[in-house]
Image (cartoon, rainbow, N blue to C red; front, side, top):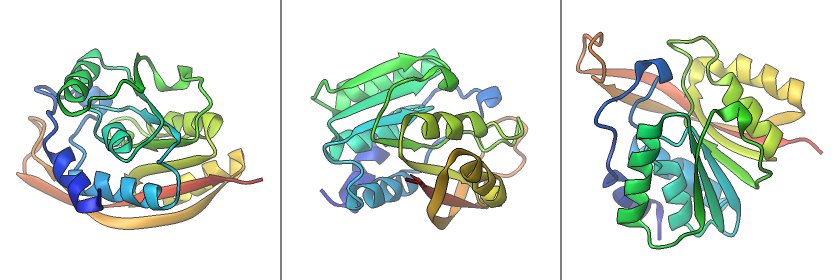
Length: 202
């Protein structure tokens, strides 16, 4: 299975009927998701590995990891509606049982895993909302692939310095956010994001 096939499969997943602005929920683009997953796969951080998809939403990243032969995936979200959609997607598009759905807040996650893959809140509604996600990832894993606004470079570098991690790479990309909430005045918003690859220093 190549990156294009992964993107096609992930584009077919069901999404939320209603999004929660307080949680900064928005749809993860299947192309961005497949790129993150494919790089992680090529780096040897997916196949045969135990993965955590923190703030999993509809499960797009964790599902992709399963399709790329992860040994086990934890899907974590604080929103029960999100987990219900995630479970429906797993039931519809995946035959294995090597996963666990966890309803809970990210700081409470406490399972040692190989790789974290995540698309946390950007911190637009609540400043540095992504900080708890990054701290949980660093606490439980030596390798993280995470999506953030490109303006977060200094903040993430500082957090890495505090927790003994280094930024291996930042893959800068354009992101299109379609009109999602009532206060959005435009049909789409374009902004720059990065896929961060973080490694624990040894």
